[in-house]
Length: 289
Image (cartoon, rainbow, N blue to C red; front, side, top):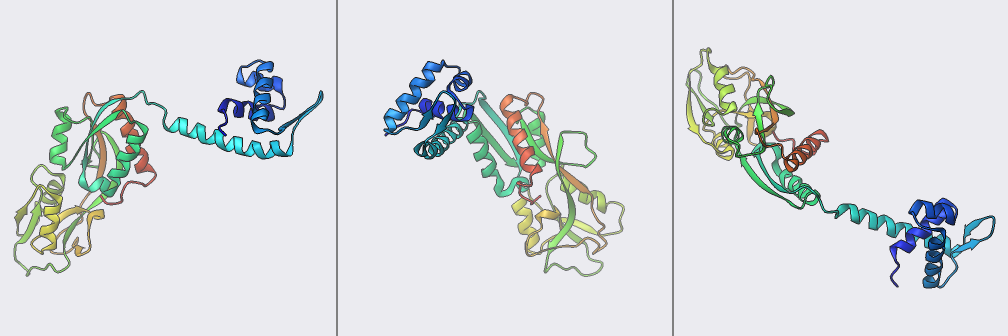
């Protein structure tokens, strides 16, 4: 049999309020309406659920058991209503992110946002700083996660990481030989930090490999072709940190920063930005940086 949720709510309200009058006030109904609903429910169940006297109202044994089921059903209906309540937020969110920030968490983030705001369409660009920063300034993205110097006043810092010199575990170079490096194209912050550290040092060096792809840089390093600058969390098996070797000094820290375009703070984009910040705070964003 199918139970009308309104009858179940009336029954639970009577029990919780301790009487028909207070239950009617809670549900904004008349006392006679509540009495009628309870009578209909008992007729449908075919059993008495309440003992009613002039002084007290108690549940029968069947009523006690029925109450547990009624509360479970209403809790489920309330949860379902909250989950599938239409969202007033719609539109498009244009989001840019570094491939080494979210890692395999990006699908989870998009899934959670899509469930919360089903009327919003996502347009995601996964790229590099040198691509994302101009897109933000040109208004082609609403928001993006990029790398910035720790003292940057731009955006909201999400997480800080350390730059390190990285080479293959098998990498070696003879004393006095020019050090080979693999860098992203300028003006990538990895390249800027690395070259700034090399400037002024009496170290012979040259760029042997350039790629706009992080996978390309990693391939060059793992092949033993060159040294590069990576965030510490990006060091993979087969790589080693070479800070302090070959005359290379320690590098600076860097922030993953959430930045916005001039007109990017639409209601949908703001909600997505909040979700990114929340995932970062609770440590759900991948530790790779």
